[in-house]
Length: 96
Image (cartoon, rainbow, N blue to C red):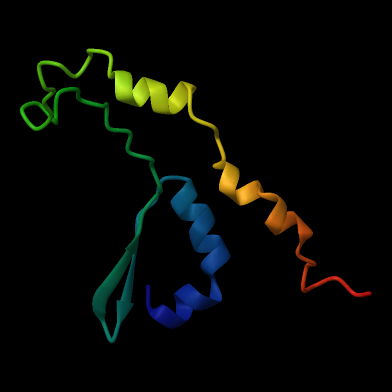
């Protein structure tokens, strides 16, 4: 089938392809494209493809007291951000 015919009858070609037919489209008598039914190719996952690329240190599962303290004992926001000086300054966006 040539390109002009394919453009003119595209919806009919799609129906034929959906029914399982393969259609070759030509330009100047030479094949340039092939319409084939779509099929999702599901490839099963294979485990272990990162084997040997990931490692853990010998102490990676040991508790880290510095990290634990920083997450549980330190404030979420440093006190300096909320000092009274900051709260007293008028916002430049406010209109009086």
